[in-house]
Image (cartoon, rainbow, N blue to C red; front, side, top):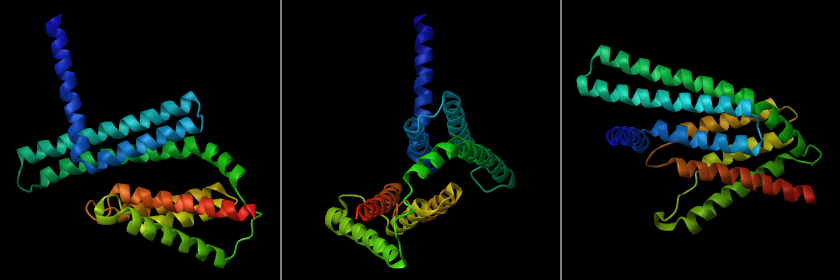
Length: 234
């Protein structure tokens, strides 16, 4: 009995080390875990039913499992075939394709599960009666730019803190403006989708890491909401 328990504990430790290795070395795994954490928080915040949460957990689990398998296949191929070989490329490409398929499934699940709660939330928070002009938008963008510059120069001196991404802040500020004033939720979701694509394209491990991009996105969203909330109170 004790030997069986020790074997089980050893197996559990090996599995934990595999997950830890993937998180430490694989950029995509870090991204998947961050997205999964945010999605589960959103599910709790929006009070989704149990069925929707089960579908979200299924999509998250499938995404992480395929990424782990992809990592295992890549390392095995590198060990067996250190040199470039067409068959090695095929093995890696097929493993990566499994991740792509699971990612597509996760995106579809997210769009179906979150559309109605987000639509209801946005319809209750829109400010279509608030006057807005092109000058107001430019002032808002200037506020976002100034906020990022102040944070970079005042609080991120000498690399002590993360420097927020200016382009990400502007992209998410514009997406938030569109979300506030459009009448169709699908347009707002498309605006944030474009911002997310900019987020992904701007990623650079050394120059623009994920914390810098996330901080920039939060600054753009929060400054925009605060500015229009103050404008609506006038």
